[in-house]
Structures are given as C-alpha cells and as structure tokens.
Length: 282
Image 1 (cartoon, helix red, strand yellow):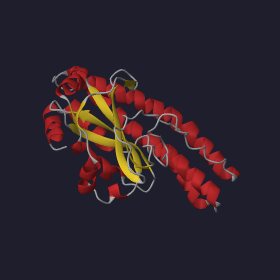
Image 2: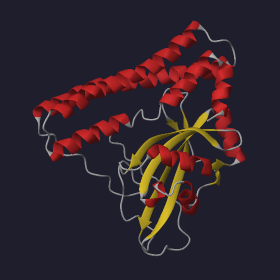
Image 3: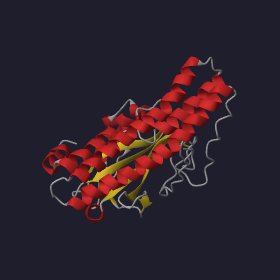
Image 4: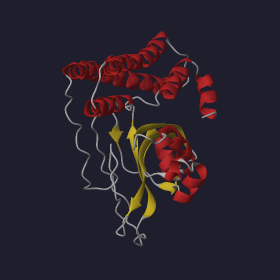
C-alpha cells in the first residue's frame, strides 16, 4: 500500500537527556459513514499514556522502540472500544498486544466524546516510542510511517528478480486492488444500514448487506493466497524473499484485526439486543 504518515508532534518543554525514550501520540477523528475515510480535526484528550504506564501494562512490548497506528470506537464517557491495529513497525512487535495495553490508557474529553457519538466518528491514534537525541528528535524512523514532519520515508523495496514470482505479484495486485475497493464499498453500505435502522427489525436487505460485507473479506485473503503459495515453492534469494514478504505484509495489514468488527456489524444489523451485549464485553 506504501502509505507514509507525517504526524506533527507537540513541542517538548525541556530537551530530553541524550539516549532517553519518549512516547508520542497524535489522534484524529475519521468518519466511516460517507463512503470513504473522511479525516477530521484532532480530538481533545483528557488522558494519554505515559511511558511508565505502558511499561507497567506491557513490559515486553515497551522494551523496544515502535510505531503503531490503531483505530477505535469512542464511548460516551470518552474511553475507547473496538480497537484494532492498522499499521505497526518494526515487524517484530506484537501489534495486538500493544493496542490492548495502550487503548485503556487513552480518554477523550467530554466534548470530544460527545462529538464522536453525535457524528458516529471513530478515532485513529498514531503513537510511537522512540529513542531520541538531545534535541528531542527520534534517532530512527520506523516504516510504514514516520511520526515527525519532514522525515524521509523508507525506500521502496528492490525489484523482484525471479520472473515467476514477479508474475505472481502482478496477479495478486490485479486481484487485490478491486477486491479491496469492493470490500470498502460493502463495508460502508453495511455500516450505513446499521446506523440508519435505529432499532427497527432487520430486513432481508440488511442481512444481504451484512453477509456480502463479511464475505468480501474472503476475496481479499484469496488474492494473497496465490502469492504466498508461489513464494513457498520457489528457491528465493534473500532480496526476493524480503520483497515478497513486504508486499504480503502491506496487503494483510489492510484488513488485519477486522474480524471482530465485521462480527459487530453483522450482529448489529440482525439483532440489536445481541449487539449491546457484544459491545458491553469489549
């Protein structure tokens, strides 16, 4: 997907000591009911995590520098639910564990929580734990995004040498792109049906929208299966192996963590009472 985010961070009051580590974050509302991810102004946080809190909650995950982006629903009290990872770097981090540790440590102000509820906004948070120099700048920028404006994005992967693998990658991209577009279209249709129904009994059209949306995810997975199978069969050199794994990681990260959200949409469309129970245990 090759996305690079440049997120402005707040100024540091006092320059940190050399080789210290800082936990930085930025948030933005997104509207998923309009047929695309419409970005909105930054929300106001009443509480954000400190490095000490993250270390207590997830000592293993806090032991290494990372960049992470995740998306959540906002409860009326400002806390977060239905949180799922979007991107993370380096590859070795446990994105799901970091989201579980970080999400409870954020809380929006009452005004921002009310706005999110009224407008059906979700919240995307970009957070990075960085070793910094004496000027407060990260010593390293982890792909797939950088947390500092002006940072140089990572270089593109080198071209694939093996012609069979290159052809498999081309087939996968030709399959993935339209499948991804269809998945997004069906997702927004299902979300809109859930939002507009307002407690009325589910119709056959509601059921069709929900099931079409869930099934569309399987098409995305199927697109990547051909590339995975080809890569396993070929004796790849280190460069080709890294390139194809990077392509697979980029595509799988596009839908990673969606299963629970898909289930919530399906339950909400078919049984509002069950949806309330599902939300209460998140």
